[in-house]
Image (cartoon, rainbow, N blue to C red; front, side, top):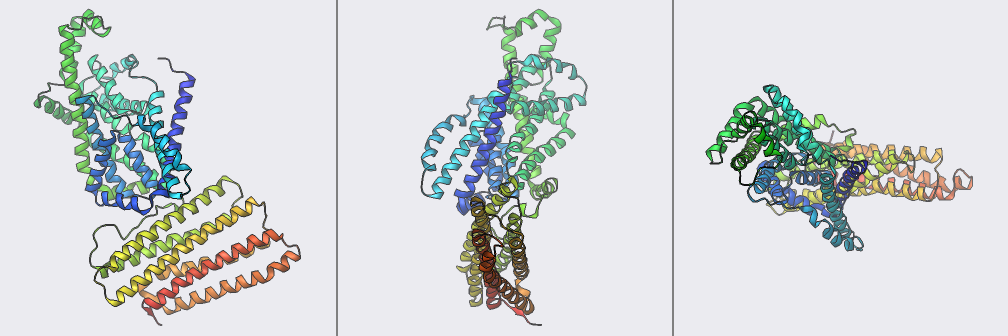
Length: 606
């Protein structure tokens, strides 16, 4: 097998293109999809069974479980799908990939998505030059989608061509008679093989060659197929490398699903493989276990005929070739039946443990920082509403979570002020703040849509007033997120102007940040338990707002004298005052939330 350094570098380039496509596609999704696609995905994955059918349908349509699971990873990375929803979709994708195997086995037809890549890029390029931001984002999504599939296609092209060189696997014959250890060994062979060649279909073809040459029995071929099931998880694992913690958890969930399925199958492997051989024979496709015995006997009884058979020197109509052709079909059907039966039984067992999967992968892939936790609705969904008054309570809880998540952005803004300019850490933190601001916009829309639907139900007058107050509160919380992102914009302009802050400015900004963070914490505590707000908490919030205003006035009054006395440059003073004004405005939005709580919710006096 001729495999050069250039081929290896091409393979690395293909992986790079795949990862870059994943990144661009995910970013385009976040900008273009908005709440509409999330609502569609939410409806498709409302419960574990609809999610299962969604995964099956997508995989059957594009005929690639790797591609469909990579898409799921990108949806989770973009905040359009929750981790729990993704688990059911991935389970469905595993069943969907067996549909593809049957299509290939019966009709020899497979959709090659990569042939549409260049036309898609051609359609997307004009969109990139659009003045509309959403249209431009759709173009980015299509470009990313195209690069992703182009990368997948190139990975398959540049991996070593093991399928055309089956002699490489001849040495494995010596490990075929070790009993149960042989099953484990060939399972690992299937795992490694699929990771290397990035195609379970190619692994399937290699296994068929090994069976035909009489190197392995049908049950060991089943073990290789079982290993390939785990090997296919490497593609979404690669895709998740460039994603957030939720995307990494989704890929880990896919791996966990296949590994746990393999463990139960290994416990009953011998009877399960025999059952599938019996099932193949019962549906009229012959005994898949017969090929190994026939070829082994032929090798012992007539070695010349055996050698002629595999150097292609026998005439086409020879009886042995016909017999082996029939038996090959039997093995092919047997392996397809094994793969299908395994995945269906696995899903029927595992579908009940979606929530447990979520808990396990959260332990296996912990968030490095609290703010890396996935940004999605916890208490309300796009499903059918129950009694409207009860829905108000759910919305109140959701607003508490929303406020807590947005308040984290204030600390992130302060960290950004002290992060080294033009460093990778600065870029990553600014990107995280921008992403939080974008997702907070979508959360505001989703909560507002939910509250509007609640308002259309039968509500008391008090309930209607409360809904109106809650709509105002989420608008103010979203404005807090805008202010936090505004800090990043001010710092970016400051860096572009090559302006430096002195220690006095940093100290004053930190003091103001401290007061704003304290005000935000007070607001969050009220919203988390909005039915039991104490009058003392309201008074403390008003006092904190006065302190913020006083600091703003004090800093403004001292700014011009400080510039005249050469404490810092005039341009530094401009950006300094922009920061002060931005933080004071954040305090205003916080006190607006407190006002709404005081006016429309029950405040307890002490």
